[in-house]
Length: 391
Image (cartoon, rainbow, N blue to C red; front, side, top):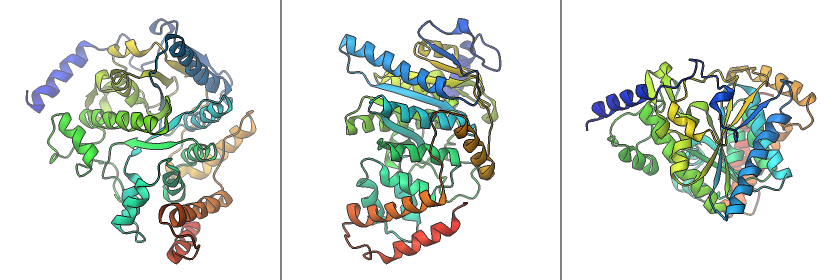
């Protein structure tokens, strides 16, 4: 079957499986099984109910697996709207609660899995050989975290999640397929990086030619990215000897979307993270939000994955673009002041400390240089970074 025939076949199957829901994809009580966890936060400034609902569901599934003697992995899919601040802050709170309840986990993030290595290579300070060594000697992901916090052009809410992961000593994994985003001025068109061996393997498995340009947000691109995320997360769990993975992702990744109209595509359930993690033998706990601005139409086939769903409504839906960092910081500070458990917020002092820790990590643990002056260019690097910080 040719690619065009295959795409037409997918369209037909998706239309056949169109959901019996409104076009806004609002889930109703009758759509959900008794085991699904519906939570209305009521107070839009308090994320406590939502946080507890997610961790309670993890404990319920964990207990069920212990009862049956199953060794299956548990994957929590935090299906966020990328610009809604409370979705990010909730991730921080869930990670804090996991540690408070003594549940070991790995936190996975929807960023190219080779981000650290490629960004190191593109910097003027590291050779390709050194960049590869740093990347390969970062088993906990803490060097990658510090690099992202220091150099990543990220919104404050994302940096808060990364700070939480770092402060709570939770193993961190960037899990997404490789793409050509880094260093690109126009990020409207992002394509998968066929030069990355792992990404290329799944491009071929999809029946596509590695010489083709595959958009990261096309139906094939999303399916390939999900396959890479599944493999990277499961490998990270094995590497750290843990059975619970919390994977951040955009909402469309969770179940698919048969109304992916922005990109004129159909994104089937069978290609979603829920379906692919389930096929790999994991138990999936999907998390969705009623106030997500990015939701389309959930395929009917996804209903089979609603068993452990956590569906959250009633939380604040303030959205901020990356360029609105100061506004988002004010919102986060206000929400922190009105809630019981606070999430960390990046400050100049924290940024300085993180960049210094990054320099020490690279000099000693990875490069084997014990003297702080062994790499004098690093000091200049951090000084330059501090001048760029938006504080």
